[in-house]
Image 1 (cartoon, rainbow, N blue to C red):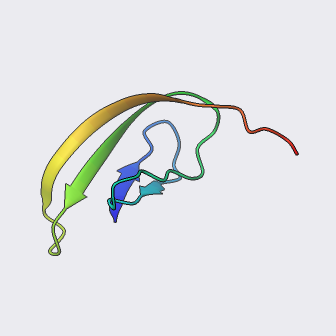
Image 2: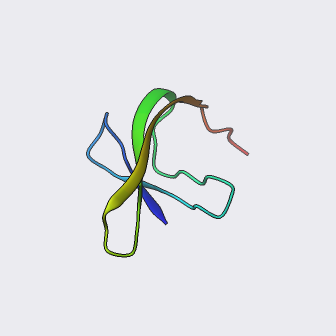
Length: 60
């Protein structure tokens, strides 16, 4: 797993590095977040700033 520190709120979100990103706990709107990939000793080995838009959740 890779921690994605949410720069616009204090709540971190988490992504799964299995090939498809899963991000939870983000409010709707445009985002700019930093993702860091760490090895088993928690040393950051890669990082990338991502820009994306979280859509408004649909109600059933």
